[in-house]
Length: 385
Image 1 (cartoon, rainbow, N blue to C red):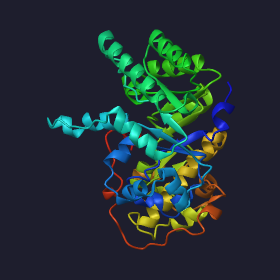
Image 2 (cartoon, rainbow, N blue to C red):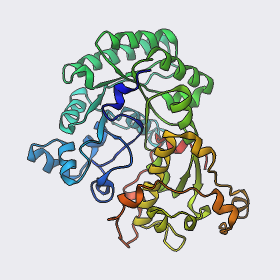
Image 3 (cartoon, one colour):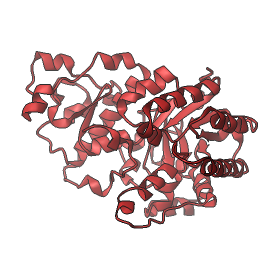
Image 4 (cartoon, rainbow, N blue to C red):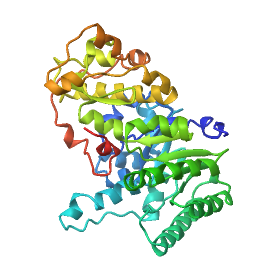
């Protein structure tokens, strides 16, 4: 597999969703000085739904969003991938509103998506696709395939093939192969596989077979995976199947719900011994600091991003670092620091000491649910609590 196709352009391993358009704290220190991953992803849906006046000021300036972010301190070398946000839109439609019998009007036209793409100044652009469900009829599937092809050719009129990430949908070999061949005939080298979360929920064996087959036919090209149902699948995606990169919002939502990532495990913050870790982030994360405070959330999010990125590169490290908290989970008491706990508690990435020298020291409490909304589409909701 020629992984250098994407690596030379900054696409590599973990690509977190960056909500800099709709959440202002992504445009402030320390997150604006992003140094945790090679690349980030944002969505056209995020751009179109945002009511932030910052976007208006960027438009008036004549700059792209990436140029405006770079002016604020965002590293120019960090690649940006622009996605449609179609999965988030469909998930909202299928969420609590539908259960209440409310018809939610959430839709973006291709022109709206492409306008957001043009404004973004991103390095890569995801072709608008349709999620093909494994339970759909052949007629429904064929209609979606035609829409996928039409969307792709429209995007090809806007951007060169080398900047397009073409999404493969489908759950059978003939459909997958046909879509892949169509993309290849237009010179595409960057591919993605979509519809993974609904497929995982429908049939886990079919999910694995589909992933492996898409990786097989795209060998020699870049392959991105959209959707991470559970964190423990990260090494399966990257190191067993061999996909080149994956995006997720899980780490943001886990942090908002006060969950601490250790290797590929997720632990409630009340069970974590922060004192045994010497990194800057964990020095702030102490039992004395209220877990709903802004600086607690911010440092927890950074710790989780860096931890996941580190183990995405080397999954063997994660196997050696597990948090064992069965007794505490049963009794509901906070774990006490002893030699056993210290030996099991991981150390965070050493770069945090440099990255967080100018971290926030805000002291006010805020309700994070006002800015971090856990939607029904988030892959974090698939993680057992």
